[in-house]
Amino acid sequence: MHRFCEECGAGMEWFRRGGCCGWECKSCGWNVATSWFDPIEMDQTAYSISLEPSENPAVSKLKLTAEIAGVNWLEAKKLIENAPAELFRGPAPQIKEIRDKLEAAGMKYKIEPEFPY
Ligand SMILES: [Zn+2]
Image (tube, rainbow, N blue to C red; front, side):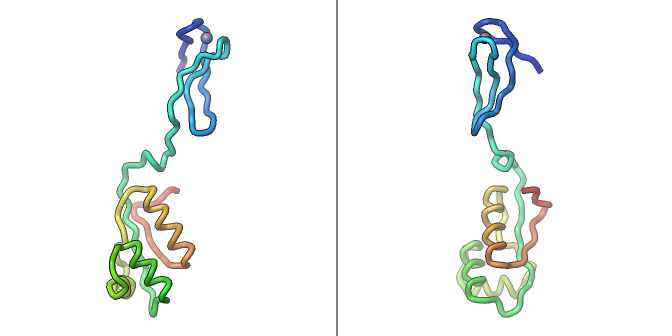
């Protein structure tokens, strides 16, 4: 893929710097920049994150489950006891956030489809 500078006609080069990328002229410095999107932000897949069963879950785990699923502690306990139960379904950035919390809490979970992040 080639592009030529609108200012001087020289060949342009693709650049990527920080949160930005685009085409830049090596001759005069004229550039066309576009925002760089993290692939995870562009992912249109709805992922499902579910818990693996766990006996006598600790209060900290109940609290986290309740927070993620948006339910009360009693329902959270049921969710864990009746696992595998879907905890949340949604876009990749949110799934990643929840995954990190579950990891930190040492909880077992499953993400479907396969989560590449
Ligand atoms: Zn130029």
